[in-house]
Length: 204
Image 1 (cartoon, one colour):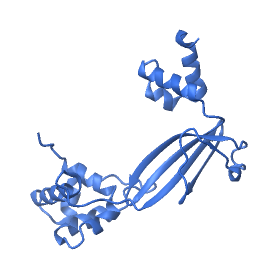
Image 2 (spheres, rainbow, N blue to C red; image 1 turned 30 degrees about the vertical axis):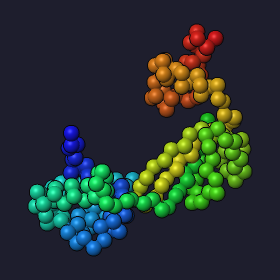
Image 3 (tube, rainbow, N blue to C red; image 1 turned 90 degrees about the horizontal axis):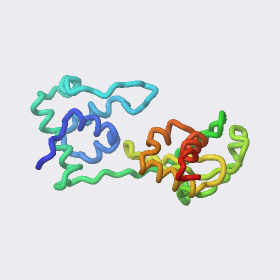
């Protein structure tokens, strides 16, 4: 069964790899109006607060009729994201965003090169953040990867203290048994989650 692809969503998806489109479709002038429209504004800049463009806006900006615009978008998309794809996207740049919170203290900074990527559970010492965080004893709590334009963004969340494998086991077990929800793990702090877990008779 062939998947129905939304051309409106294709425009939004292309915005996230906008910096690669000119190189991917170099020499294919029929796509140039679409690429110019998609890359004309930085929709991913949260400070600009721009809404994603609508199909009508794309039609007016490119001067293409609806059926032509749809056909070209589907063709561009199929060259990257289908089984018969001919083009490979590339994320040549890497940024590491570090986030630390400790009660009312918080700190964040960005690194553009690391020799080794720390793993979840690794202990970390950051003596250069002491002006913001009064403790220099951290562990990697979570690592997430995002991909935007030509950049792989690795988000590393640190917590104060020592990684507790038993607590992680208890939390994962409670999630599996639906004793807590995923929203609980994000909305509640660790102490509140522990109170819920320890209140269960299974953990006494």
